[in-house]
Image 1 (tube, rainbow, N blue to C red):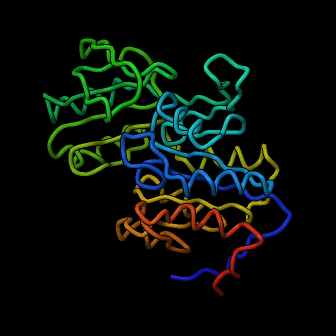
Image 2: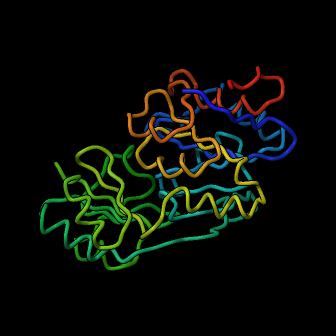
Image 3: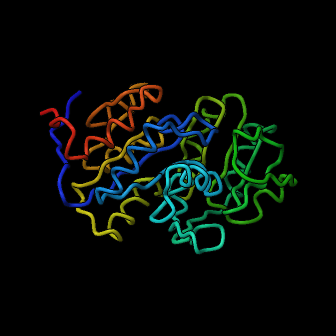
Length: 276
């Protein structure tokens, strides 16, 4: 797939980067030297790099630090949380926008169909309330074990449901008004209504006063589709599934090939001309 976009030049561009499968292996904070160098060069050239991920905020911050992002913006929890990075602030960030939903209808419907479902509800900046402990690489931050009744007693930004085959419940849960993103057959991410990485990034774009055509998004997952179609140039990682590839304007290399670094370097004036 080729693209007709050439965004090199003096005007600032907003580059949105997914984390898992795009710049890091799922559940890790290790970023390749090539990606870190490309992020630094792009920022030096005056462009904005924004991490946009399904991870909770507590899982975003170490990745941002590894990328050298100590100021600017970060989008977490599939768009439910937007934070401004600030070294002078407690924890290194200031919450800008936090969207929540009532998880009780979701929990009731999920437990009715899958009585043994494992549930996690995000506590922003801390971790999760969980009915059973998840593996450390599966969720970020502290895990506080609570009864099923208590896991849904407060509004939350993001809820995780895990049970064999629970992806079959996707459309019934969407009928309660929430946003549902599957990750395989056994995992569902639930976030507030009419929300995605794209809706949060659009708000950031406006705050940064970046032209809508000067936006790039790079991702590899189902939860990146809205972000890829929102961007002036949506780029899918080479290993992304077919529906993600179909949503993109362009395709780059895989995670192992540092495909995200290739996209970032395309913004630099010394790179070869864009494919036309």
